[in-house]
Length: 213
Picture 1 (cartoon, one colour):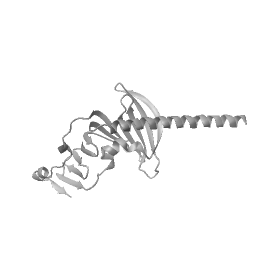
Picture 2 (picture 1 turned 45 degrees about the horizontal axis):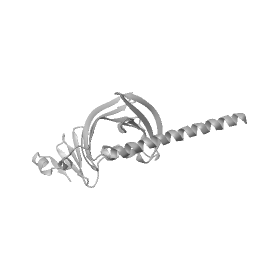
Picture 3 (picture 1 turned 30 degrees about the vertical axis):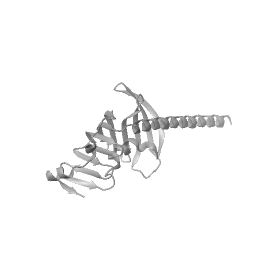
Picture 4 (picture 1 turned 90 degrees about the vertical axis):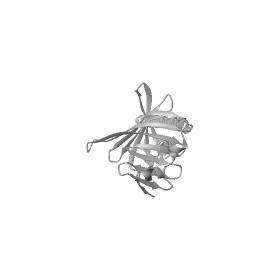
């Protein structure tokens, strides 16, 4: 009986600690989402890294994106993605062509709105360790998908505790591939011309780009 009481007490303490940490994680994520949603515009410079040690693959790149509500202009891997709030235009510079996707986005992962706010639902939260990176305290939170059919094993969000901004987002896939986006610079509420989010079809036609509607 005494041993059973000890086990039950330890189980209660562990469950209570997990619930408290999960609650802390949810609170911090809500603060981050609220803070980033309050900005009228965001200009982000980011780094990208993909690693799979099992097959010895490592890819690195960088990019930038300007967002305003649901609109964005993303420059990534020598391609340009423009979403005007209605359609998405994928400008493939190497092939000199433009693919027009009516009513949506080509890749959810490349939609900054989804990337910066995807964690709001559909995940269990775990409060992890914190680190000092570039003189900033970064708190890490692990997100485990509730839907077992997802290709991602889990995500880890790094959050700048001081300003409640996302520092990085890391996804670990079921195939052990780890993909990480790190925000190197974030400028907010800058005056941004609407033409940044508009696709100039005539200009690309003049460059002899093929436009696939």
